[in-house]
Length: 370
Ligand SMILES: Cc1cc2nc3c(=O)[nH]c(=O)nc-3n(C[C@H](O)[C@H](O)[C@H](O)COP(=O)(O)OP(=O)(O)OC[C@H]3O[C@@H](n4cnc5c(N)ncnc54)[C@H](O)[C@@H]3O)c2cc1C
Image (cartoon, rainbow, N blue to C red; front, top):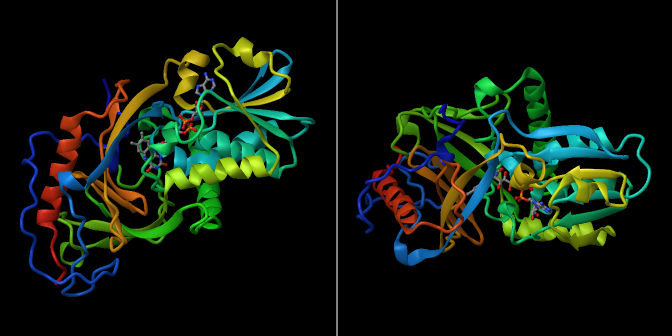
């Protein structure tokens, strides 16, 4: 089976790394700044089992040919699909929702239904409201019980398609979605939504380290002596990080403040949707679309994460072959796995132990710049 497009932070961490126990770190003063200058070190994450506050599992809605944004007729209704974002649902949410609303809203009159209350459903609902239409949001589960709540929250397109399976038309949608999302997130930065910028380092030698020539803008290639990681070259750039729990809670509030109705409801078949009173329906059910619309291309890509006690002084993030680290106010997110066709949502202690061990090893190999 061909491999999915899997990027550093999405790769399954290699097994067999050393056991838990933090080894001595190189003796250099930390600067507390995000980018080390000469003779400086980045502050380190304290990786140990006793700092683990939770481990989580989520199933990314992965499709080799990419997300689906498409309109079709369903009886007397227009149904607009917006699902299948793989490992990039937070990143792409505003953008694909914009593409979806551009397909569905022109010429429509009256109330609108949105199915799904993950990040894609919530952003779709907000765009529909911003365009002046009343919305009812129907969902089997609400935040915090969605896959979107599990996401690490980095803005970066990862793990959402396979290169040989996408069309030029899809690529155009992808570029447009990243562009709109990128601009939308920038005007939401701040504590209300739990969104902030962080300097980020990526192992430049990892395959698929950059999916789009246009993103991230302003990245810099650093030689080995210019960055602290045990990689030959690193790419450094600034991107946006989302504290997903806070963000989704706030988006749900925004939908309600703007008059949106919330209905907890499980749809078993398209016929259930056809019976809704609204004549325009957006399908934002993520992995749920596999059963609901018999989309057999849609598969779970399970991700397991270890969350450590927060450390305020960590103000940088990284992604590499040994894993990824996103510091959030609610905990340090250490990833992770990308396991296709795994449906089990119970964290596996062995996988979590491997994530911790891998990050401990990386810590031991961090250098100060010279
Ligand atoms: C470990 C992990 C880390 C990740 N990290 C990142 C990251 O750093 N950056 C990033 O951009 N993305 C990341 N992702 C990917 C991201 O989480 C997903 O792409 C995103 O959550 C998909 O959002 P969604 O709204 O489509 O689906 P969901 O969040 O799953 O929401 C689907 C909604 O539809 C409802 N629903 C489903 N079926 C039905 C039905 N039959 N009837 C009624 N309602 C239904 C559900 O109850 C839910 O409300 C990560 C994912 C995982 C698992």
